[in-house]
Image 1 (cartoon, rainbow over the protein chains, first blue to last red):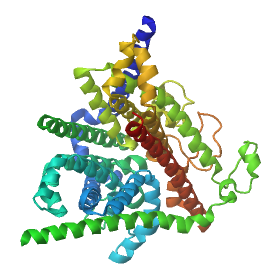
Image 2 (image 1 turned 60 degrees about the vertical axis):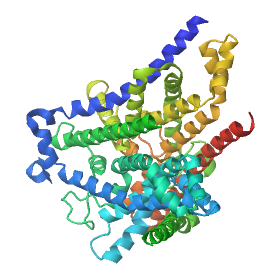
Image 3 (image 1 turned 30 degrees about the vertical axis):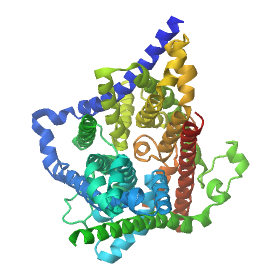
Image 4 (image 1 turned 90 degrees about the vertical axis):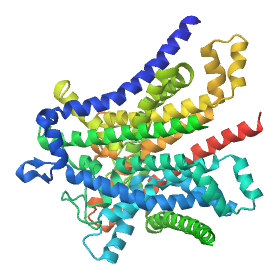
Amino acid sequence: MKGIDRFAEKFFWVAAVLSLSVTVLIFGFMVILGLPLFKGGQFFEILSKPWLPDRGIFGIYPMIVGTLSIALLGLGFAFPLCLGCSVFISVLGPKRLGRILKKTVQSMTGIPTVVYGFVGIFLLVPVIREVFESGSGMCILSASLLLAILISPTMILFFSDSFDQVPKPFLDAVDALGGNNAQKILYVILPYSWRGVLTGLILALGRAMGDTMIALMVAGNAVALPDSVLDSARTLTAHIALIIASDFESLEFKTLFACGIILYLFTTVIALLVRSIDSKSWRRK
Amino acid sequence: MMDRVLEKVVTGFSWICATVLLGTVFSIVGYLLVNGLGTINVTIIFGETDPVDALLFRKQVFDGLFPAMVGTFALVALSVSFAVPIGIAAGIYMAEYCRGGLKRIFSLVFDVLAGIPSIVVGLFGFSVAIFLHNYFYSRIYPCLLISALSLAFLVLPYLIRTTQVSLENLPENIRQTAPALGATKLQNIFYVLIPRSLSGIASGVILSIGRCAEDTAVIMLTGAVTMVGVPKSVFSNYEALPFYIYYISSQYSDKQELLSGYGAAIILLVICGLLFMMAFFIKNRLTYHALYRQ
């Protein structure tokens, strides 16, 4: 009996260590395969140069700009929308409508990303093209609008969860003082749950920067540095998706690992940030 | 006075947001249904081939969605069978055995794994395949097996988390009854704790099935192609629904192809929707049991 117990514990442990080593291995692979880039400071050169394959320059600066502008603009569209929706769900909306909205948002997490992209190409892109009368309609603006919808469920569900964690006596106190629901949100719930809101925002940023399909399908994938939100752009993720390796040893191919390393490090920073906010809120409670 | 205005604005704003979001979602799904529902029939799936022959794999289907559906199914079955045992075992380790500083390190690493963009996991799978091809066995290329393994890595953190959380959420009195009667730790886990948290674990498994079925970024780097028919072995290329949708959206040559893209999108949406509802239903049953059965 004891033997089985010890064996089972070993087995569970092996599974956990295996999962841990996969995580480390992914990073290790990127670094080893991208190793030539680190010699002689080439890595930082790549980060700051444009992508001009004809002249042998393979910089990913335009992709970094593309990723940041699409993700941040998407977050900018989504944040007020999500705040409004979660306030509607938790406090301000009629109970039934709020529940319908919440169910819809939960179901949105089940919609495949590629379906968003597909509908975006045939529904959103033509509208953007007609309204702004410039280019093909495949641009930063289209991608960030679609991305805003994609990341909304993450934020809304996270926000309304943290709104629901406000202790009931606080809310009763507002009622007792004759305050209305709008005052409840403004003066009690939002000040109390700002850490949750911040965490949701950071998680959504991670989701926005890591998404591939939306940018790949509707941002146009131009390698030039974008000038305006109506310009086509390429993200780091789309850049990885687009290069079909012809030569495994070429510098062009090595830059993919630079993209991978940046995205990986960014993910780690997000995990650390969320963790530090979380632990602080525990200490306070 | 200013405050009054602010409060009115907040209320109005939240109504506008709710309307905008609901409107957007319904127009996305509605657009798809209006344009694609008419295309859903036997021909879009099996083409000119007889459905019975296709289902028995006696004849290949080249002008329908059948190979893509088989590919997606094989992919999901393979990757879930890799990921579920490891994910659940690691989740049990996290909830029942791991303690202290070690637990914090493990949790952080799994958070990182959960956040890694799927395209980076795809790039990893792709480079591993090329690496193996160059140094070990020249017949290994990006293929169904490589995709399934990469997808397994992608869903591993979800499985670990759902297992861990549903075990940790069990009330203390349930946790201590069996050991008090002389059961070992392992007996307690298998006869008491896991059966009690089964619905949480099951909904995690179903959600990861959905994640495997919808992911496009991983498979486009690790062996998904179009026009190869039903995969012959785990070492061959394969078709998959999400990749087909992506491919059609950028490469369609005529109206018929585009329409089959709409059809594929609806089929994928329905599959993912059903999986999602199933997971949700099981989880709700869990809270029902927790609330009314004790």
